[in-house]
Length: 137
Image (cartoon, rainbow, N blue to C red):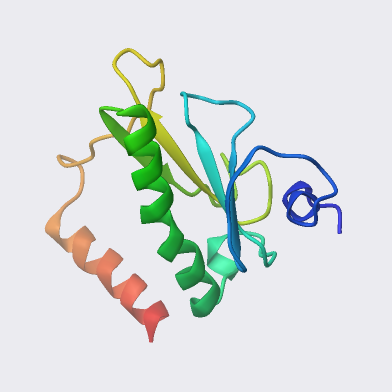
């Protein structure tokens, strides 16, 4: 497999590993968007979170609080973003992983969520809700 994260898990590519257990590793992101930016990566390959089974997702998410707490204690950020990119436009490595990005005053990291409150009607919420619920059954 030509997956950079699988190669890191296998020890074929060096990484700055801050945590490892039987199922997950956590490494410093080479971009260091902010100091302490860490990736939490399941050892078992899946393209993204939509392809993970319940057990593997539980293993990934059970570690996120522990790593987040350690980063919080180490760097005392004003907050954190914890995010998972899935497919386009932002996923660049197609192996499930979570970013923990500590936030600091004037850190230059920008996230923008468009506010469509005025555009979305109550009927739209009902339609959206029904579509999601249909896929959950």
